[in-house]
Amino acid sequence: MEYVSGGLLFDLCQTMGAMGENAGRFFMSQLVASLDYMHNLRCVHRDLKLENILVDEHLNLKIADFGFACYKSIDQLKSYRGTMTYMAPEIKEGKTYDGTQVDLFSIGVIIFIIVQGIFPFKEARKEEYFYNLLLTGQVETYFEKVNGTGLSTDFKDLILKLFSYNGSDRYTIEQLKAHPWLNKPGFNADQVREQLLADLHSRQQAAKPAPFQQQPVKVKRTNASGVL
Image (cartoon, rainbow, N blue to C red; front, side, top):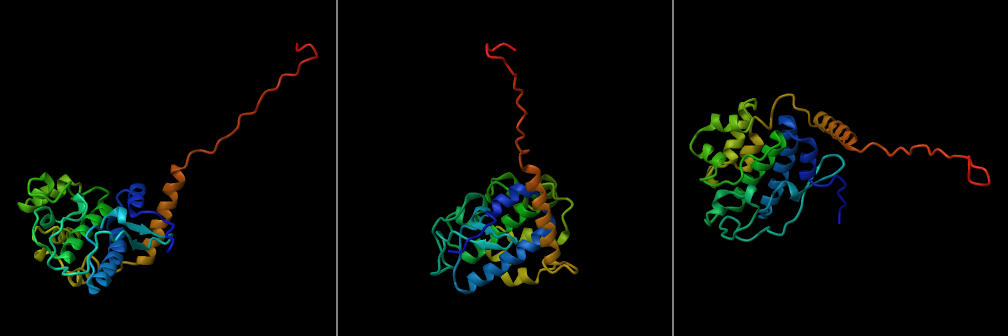
């Protein structure tokens, strides 16, 4: 099997914290390309989360753990699969669902964490405070509560579409690829990669414990009787 030396995307997010929108674009473009490939093969993952995505030494993402994946009747699924914080509401409510749409919901959670450094909500349930703000149209209040008032209008639009309560209202892969947030003029993926790697190295060095310094041992010289 391929060896991926960088660990989990979860670990990277813990080390880096909020990485901002350019980092979000950098990783989102990779995730969109991966999902596009998978879904064109009629395969859905159903458990996309930070812990199931690996990162190599160049910050390339590798989707892993296909234990809940499905390739049969992917647009008419019923089984309860996924991880609560990343799970689309239609799965939680026991509805028949389209696997491609629930994967896109999970991608929304992942990108929000990369950009903001926090989860967007505990669960996508009507009674959950933060998700309810979105369902009831209290968008400005929501972004105030999640420290997101400084986020761009395009990012907010993309996130709101991915977090749609109804799967059919979410952006498709094609809509994501064409979205202005992902296609921001002047965005340079190589420059963002270099900056992220430099920041990561700096944080890792700062987190290392100080090297052990052995204190000099003072030796007392004695005579034959043991007395100085």
